[in-house]
Image (tube, rainbow, N blue to C red):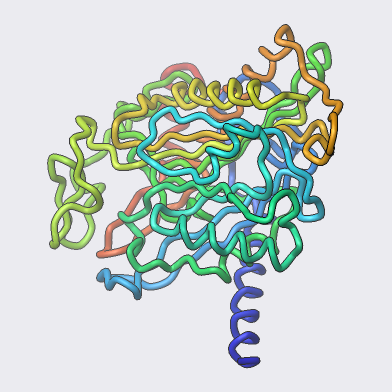
Amino acid sequence: MQMKRWMVALVAAAFTLYSNSSLDAQAKPRARDLGVPFDGTPGPLNAITDVEGVEVGMTTLISGEGALKVGTGPVRTGVTAILPRGRASTDQVFAGWFSLNGNGEMTGTTWIEEAGFLEGPVFITNTHSVGTVRDASIKWGLEHHRQTAQPWSLPVVAETWDGFLNDINGFHVRPEHVFAALDGVRPGRVAEGNVGGGTGMRCYGFKCGTGTSSRKIDVRFGGHTVGVLVQANHGTRDLLRIAGVPVGQELPQPPAAARGAGMQIGPVGPVGPMGPVGPVGNDALGEMGSIIIVVATDAPLLPHQLKRVARRASLGLARTGSVSSNGSGDIFIAFSTANPGAAGGREVAQVAMMSNDRIGAVFEATVQATEEAIVNALVAAETMRGAEGRQLEAISHEALRQVLRKYNRLAR
């Protein structure tokens, strides 16, 4: 038993090391580095962690090549953990959530809707790992004495589908991977692209995944910060717009682009030797993806206001071209790190609330940061080959710059 525990700890430590290094390593260019123009002023890191207290951890799982063997691989998946007040705090935050299209899952939202508080992390993983991540979160919380508000836990776990590249039915995300992501949370730079829960994801017909951005609100309107993290796995190629430019139409997907070994394009999407890849629906766009958007802010907002903020993420998503089709699970959550201790009062809690006359600045910052986070997820992603030799191509940085230049939208 001791040897088994030692081995699990060793594996977890290895994944923690990978997660930590991926959080620190941000050498690859981001959308702004390529000259993509965006509105608004980002924070120092242009990441969700620009909101003081927010920490992010990731576990990335990549192994195997070739033919899909359920339970063995190839594996292209992971888990992302976002702690609103970091590991050191058990204080709850005010929160609100919104479903633009509900073909997806985000657990724990009924209690957020009822009570207005988020306790613990927000997790993002693949569709078939939600239960594992939820249960592991509870176990980690018990072991770290974080279950303080109630004698039960209602974790928030969201998902998108990575079954094109990943052995999603092999259930490769395990409790030790969730522990590693939680043990590895930290402030500072956040890795983007093929990392964490976004490892095997695609959006707008390109390789995609995890992306983040932030905005500083002018001091005239409070000087607050808004940060966004997305797990992007949505949209078809023709819909993609960047900086108002129809990039997806300028960079059409060739017939062979979505093919791997034995692949062809069917009426509802990619088809492999054993039939359609993924669920077959009646989505006229052929979309089989989703996007999860997490919005953080230090502005003093109450739950009903945070639901309004979560709704505004829809507008940032729309700026990139999405129409939130039937096959897309587009679910968003927003939380505020203001009002510490509000959930701990036994009698009356004194809280601050931003006026409706000022909240428009938070709405604008949310829209801007959401748009940029999605484009950052695209730009950071790298071409990846997965199950059955299927390959997703990353968007070409030079091709993107050429298209923006054609429309006179290249910033430099």
